[in-house]
Length: 462
Image 1 (tube, rainbow, N blue to C red):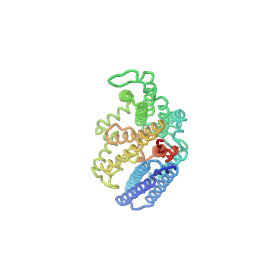
Image 2 (cartoon, helix red, strand yellow):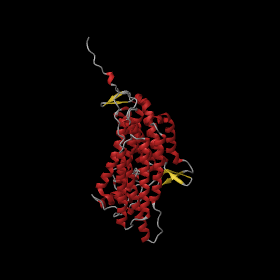
Image 3 (cartoon, rainbow, N blue to C red):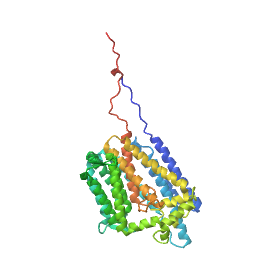
Image 4 (cartoon, one colour):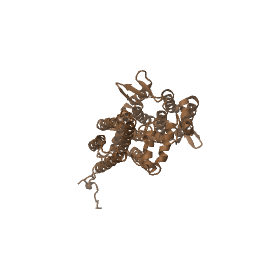
C-alpha cells in the first residue's frame, strides 16, 4: 500500500492577493495626484488604472498555468515598482500640462500613454518567455549563439545609418521610425552566454597555480576570458561613451566568474582591472573626467553640466523624511525627471521613508532571485538566476548611487520605474526567466518512487 504524496501548494492565491494590493496602491497614488494637483479624475487616469489592472491579471493567469510553482513574491513586487513608475510619470505629465497652460503653449503629449504601451509590449514578451521557454536548461544549447548575438547588439549602435547618438552617448538604434537600446537585450543574452560558458569552463578557471597573501591565483593562461571582458567593456566606454553599460557588463562577468569558481582571487583581479580602467578613462577621456569632477564638486557646475544633479539634491532636501506628498513637489525642475532622474522626483514627493521602502522592494526582488539560484538543482540554472539577479542589483546600485551622488552619474535607467521601452521590456524578460527557473526549483519531484508500507517488514527469528 503506497502513501499518497502530499500536494505542495503553488501559492498562486498569495500572488493574486499581493497583485491586487499593488494595484490598489497605484489607484490611490493616481487619485492622490489628481486631488493634489487639481487635475481631478480625468479619462487619462481611469485608462491608466484599467490597463494596468488588466495587464497584471494577464501575467498572473499566465504564471498560474505555465509556471504554477514559481516564486509568488517576484511578480507582485515587479508590478508594484512598475505601477509606482507609472504614477510618477503621470504626475510629471500633469505638471508639464499645467505649465503649458500657464505659458499659453501647446499641450504636450502625455508620456504615460507611451509607457502604458511599452508596458503592454513588455507583458506580451513576458508571457512569451513563459510559454516558449518551458525548461531553462534548453537555453544552454545555444550558449555561443546567444553570446554572438549579444556582442552584435552591444556594438550595433556604432553601425552607420541605424546608430544614433543621444545626449553624447551612442546607445540607440533607429529602424522603421522606432528607436530602442539594443544594449538592454544584450545584457540578457550575455548573461545566458556567461552562465553556459562558465558551467563548462569553471573547473579549469578554478585551478590554482600560485598563492599570494592567502589567495589562490589562477594560471596565467586562464586569464584570457577576464581580459577579453575587460577590453570589451573599455571598448563600449571609448566608442559609445556609455559608462553605465561598461560597468554593468564587466561587473556582471566578474561576479558570475566568482560564483562559478568560488575563488576570491577573481574578485581581486577584477577589482584591479576595474581600477586600472577607471584611471585610464579619467586620464584620456574628457566625458569621464567631467563626470568625476561634477561628482566631486557639483556646485561649481551648477549652472551648466552639473545642473541636473544639483536640482536632484535640492529635490531630496525638499522631500525630507516623509516627502512633500504625491502631486505637491516640483519634479519639472529636474531635467529628464521621468527617465534618468525619476528617483529624484519620487524622493521629493515620498521622502526618505518612501525611498527606503522602494529600495527594500528592490532588495526583496533581488533576494528572491538569488534564493532561486540557490534552490535550483542544475549548475546552469544556478548561474543564470544569479547572473540575472546581479544584473538588476548592479543597475539599481549604479543609477540610484549616481542620482544620490554616491558615485558618478552613469546614464543607466532605474529598472521598472523609468520612462522608456527598452529597459522595461528587457527587465520583464529577466523576471520571466527568473520565474521559469523558480518554477523548476520549487516544483515537487514527481519521479521519486512512492513509499510502500510493504517495504518495511517484521522478521521473526525461527
